[in-house]
Length: 123
Image (cartoon, rainbow, N blue to C red):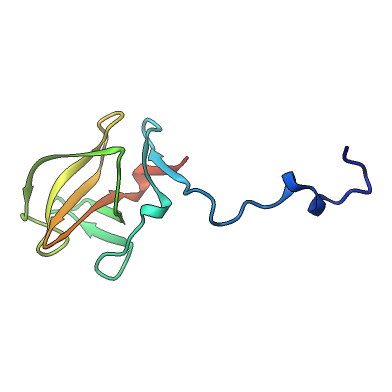
């Protein structure tokens, strides 16, 4: 039983969760489906975040991820207008609702997901 004289530090259920706890999920902002996790964040070309502009003038802030089981890559890989030299890209869409989430990059022994950060939210 908890009384006024009991301090929260002595109660196991009030301890802070260690930082090594399971990764927080990142979900599709549109449908809430799990897309990837914080631990899948990686650095490519010296950064995790990259700001890029497509040929139509749209600006995207991408985050690089090693894995995105909630995304599906579609289309034929192409090097046309690639944002990562030497890496081909395909569209990456949400498995849950088909919303465009970014791109899947592959080539030169490398493979990763470049996901538009404002299309994801924390679970």
